[in-house]
Length: 74
Image (tube, rainbow, N blue to C red; front, top):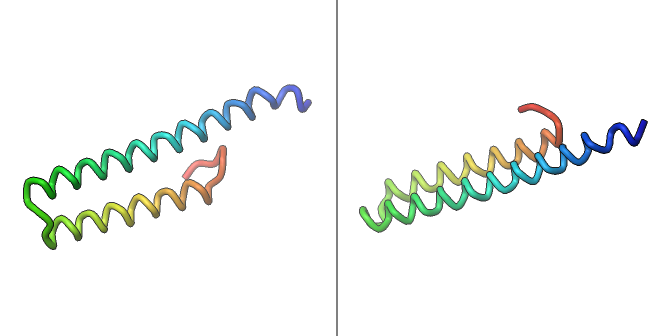
């Protein structure tokens, strides 16, 4: 029986790694976006507020992903 579960365990690990990589890519894209905005508009209240909101949302989604654990939907 354990032998039959091995492909699913491997798939779960692969999926978890893919999600983690995508989260890091999203964070990189977010950082690039805010760098772009700061280069255009400079550092002001609007860019700082937006950056803080997006960072809070990113951290919230990351916590939710970790709490859900592998194989669970959220």
